[in-house]
Amino acid sequence: MKKILLMFIAAAGLCAFQVQAEDMNAAMDNNDDEVMTISEAVLLANNSPVMIVGTITEDFGNGKYMLKDDSGETIVIIEEDDWEGMAAKLGNTVHVNGTVNHTDQQNVEIDAISAMVQP
Image 1: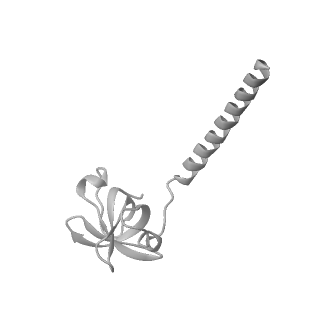
Image 2: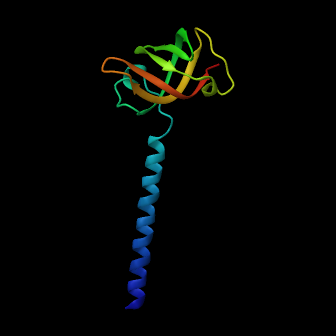
Image 3: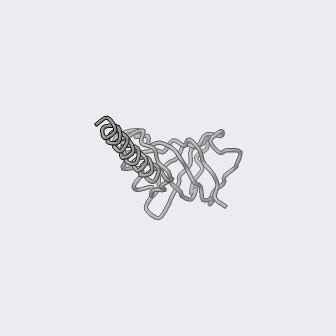
């Protein structure tokens, strides 16, 4: 009887391990650097993480840029240390990881955590 009980416990543990591994794989798949459009990003809740790609259409100075894609445009705040050693200029396509910042009910900005100029 003890052997049957031990086999049952071992089998249950193996099943639980398999389910946990599948859950971890699903979570990793969902976090696969999913780029969203600017129009999708600005609809998210305040402080939501975003990854967007767009073209710099205006440089307002002090790390404030207008970034545009096919869906729309938004202001992106990219501080000097977020550029990872790169420099950007008007017309560059930029990949931005950041968070949504609702400055008020009408305006949304993206605060960059990192930004890279696309080749």
